[in-house]
Image: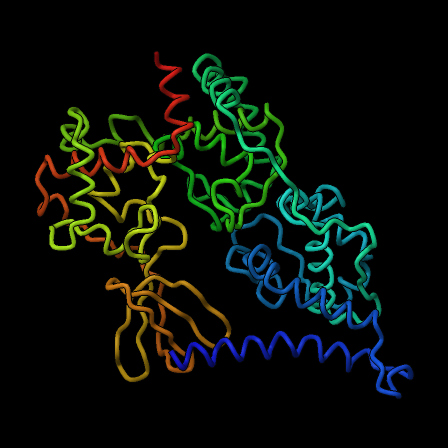
Length: 433
């Protein structure tokens, strides 16, 4: 605990240092009497506010220090801009940087792989990103000030209604499979929007978001529709920005993604798994099994549902809304097949010869935090690490087929499939009647 508190203090001091360095670097005759320049102070405060936004939304491509070396950079057709390059940053006006962030790369005649953030962040937040980019580029000449009329609230996007969901599901059933719609959706995904910068299909594309080669097998169409229209409604802290798509674009994208099966349905569900899907299970029995800490499943040790359970694995409170039963079955019987983004396990060998494994939850230049399979939080200084490797295996047990009965698995599947948003359940039921 003490080490974690010290880390928080170090981060706080680092944030304060940004402001201090700006005050020092901009010091001029006006500072001789001990009075700080208000414009410099505002610039420094904006930059400090922009740092966490940059690390969350931008660093995976542009790099933590703006050197264009983020972990996703190697997957892009065009190298991300090096924001630490003083000459590059200095030749861009504040207004052009703001427009590139707000409206995307195409708005300033750059790559379409740079997404739009104007539908996700407030104008004040975007100006703070501009200020932080000046810090990365060591550009002290073009100070950033918040325009008087800049909006401080994030854009408000209406929630989808029963009517819009029902209309979409009806359209999807009647027209979603047409070749014209599928072609339009593929063109949007690959060439028009920024989807390919973060998502991959058949090993081509980015690695920030989920791999989508089997999107139609993994996700329900109504979930994709809601997600594409506004990701923040489903997951407020997601890295995916709202792309501001039109209704037609959202529908075309869903149709294209639903067409990605990664193979025939018969191939995707092994013959020996089909009996689990042929008869319905008992959701009440599944819930009891899920939360039974002395049972063979003990799912709640790692997963949470509606605030109850562990934090090692993904929260499953609405998993029935987004995931198809076939995929939920695969996750139970073969958890390594698809590992949710952000839940890959890491293996650490310390300089003392100790092995540590768990889910990485935080990392900075000096240290990283992981949660082991028992739910324990571990803080590891990088200076103490000899080797570090991200594993292509799931921390979830892979022997449920051996330790659970056929009825147990059906019951778990019934319980998980029922964890849905009532509105989506109602709309799907109406359509099938």
